Image (cartoon, rainbow over all chains, first blue to last red; front, side, top):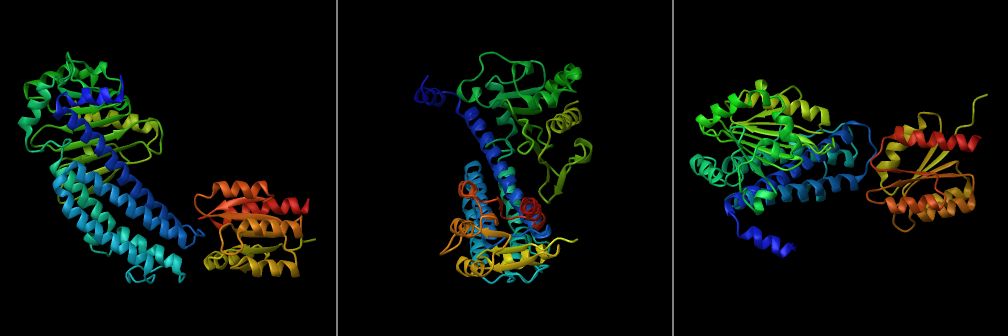
Length: 326
Length: 126
């Protein structure tokens, strides 16, 4: 089948499931860009603390990298939630201006960022880190503060892949009518690639899906599947999981429990991660194993764990699955 | 009997590199001179050869490759270590093929450069 024929086929199928799949994949790109920004920050931090020899080119390329990745995050956010675009781009332009001022201005102009060195390159890097996540800088002027704002824009209005989070009934109807309810658990299961092209002709079981993170998540739940399944079905299906071989996006459908888990379990430690957003009422300490970075905000809780080994991601997903689904 | 201190030349058009490297390399008793342009450095080398030359690869007027060629033409025993910037792996490879002893990528720790210098010293004294 040619690409044109595939696209033609896709365009004739259920658009909302396809939209859901595309948005889920886009959200993963969004997280990748956020992660790259954190990596840049860590790199700069390591250089300023670790007696490194670097020059101005390093700092300027760090600033350029931050601006570029931040722009990619804003773009992803606009694709996920188009109505957020105008406000985010206004703030993004301010950050571009700050970046330009850092490159073209006098190092040390951010007075609250004292450097251990008088050298302009080291002072400039100190200023950049202050701009990124300065403890004394107002939250709305830092890159980290802006990243949180972007996350809120996406999470608040796009809890499950472009479908309004408050519209639970419509969401359930969409998945119910698409025939993606699993036969053996109270969960909707969407194959990110196949279901975008053609909806399943018959109901599938968990075992029909070749998804590594899904298998990890359910590893310690399977023994209780009858209980979990029947209880959930009586109360309405509570979860939707969108999967590919290495990716899992798990979303709560309970109106009073907002929870989103995104993970990549590819076997490459540097790229594998677990990201979670949960509402303020969720007791993450009882759901997550040790090792997660957790940030509580007025809007909800973010938790993430980066650079996970295969064993670590398997154990973590198993514990999370047991705590969430049993 | 203690060994003679090494004579090390550092060339980088970014002043900060020489400024930071000089005290770090002098800790072991070696003699370090720093330069911010190739012309002055080569003129100094004419007066007196150095055991080790550490040079940035990208500089205006005379770049690191040219410095490498001129140094090796004047003194075959001098070990030349190239400092590369970002995304200059190909140029670093070219430098190695032209006789550079090794290369190190910015940003780097002085201790990492010291390891390379120690290897070069062993060859010089063998």
